[in-house]
Image 1: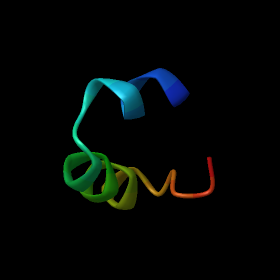
Image 2 (image 1 turned 135 degrees about the vertical axis):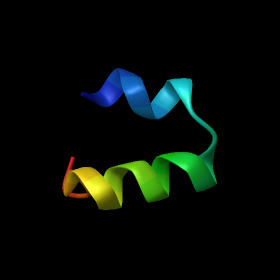
Image 3 (image 1 turned 120 degrees about the horizontal axis):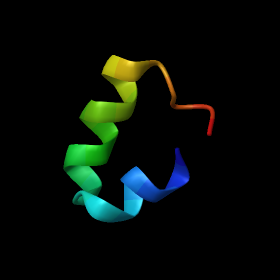
Length: 25
């Protein structure tokens, strides 16, 4: 799921990853 990080802004991916619980990756 590393590609989704590049698709969204830094602040967006932080929130998105937090919701997904994918902060480890």
